[in-house]
Image 1 (tube, one colour):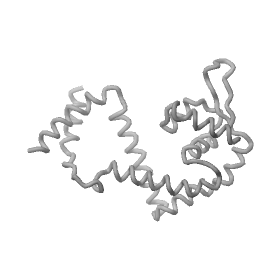
Image 2 (cartoon, helix red, strand yellow; image 1 turned 180 degrees about the horizontal axis):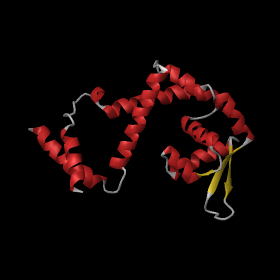
Image 3 (cartoon, helix red, strand yellow; image 1 turned 45 degrees about the vertical axis):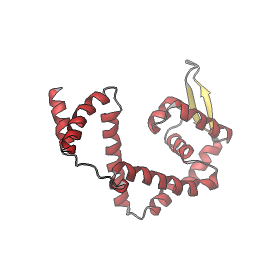
Image 4 (spheres, helix red, strand yellow; image 1 turned 90 degrees about the vertical axis):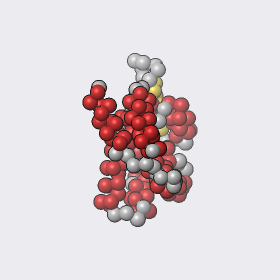
Length: 181
């Protein structure tokens, strides 16, 4: 444990003092890029009467249908309170159907309907169109994707745990003191 704290403290020591400009914040760059992607996808998905979160659910099901609500939520980092209404709207629009597990009535699995399967072929162009809107090369987009997946994993590992406050707060307090000198 002591080695871990030392590593974290060293990592915190290497962090530069944050600037006051919003444009200099990594979190804002990620947030605003996500917002811009949302607008881009909205333009691409409106013709199909889909929202971006609904599209993500369909992407997961096109890869593997019959997943439980919990499994879909895990893949998309969504809780059941967010996912359940989304799935109900997809069911109402005829894209998916929900089925209770006979062995465990509490488990609900999600399956594509013929309409949901048919939509997959018409949506094949969406990732390429969205990628083209970035103005980045395919290699550049892949490098960015790899970096963002790594970032997401690091943040999840370092913050999402129940001990996140204790493992981050002490080195952070040391960093704050050093930064204020």
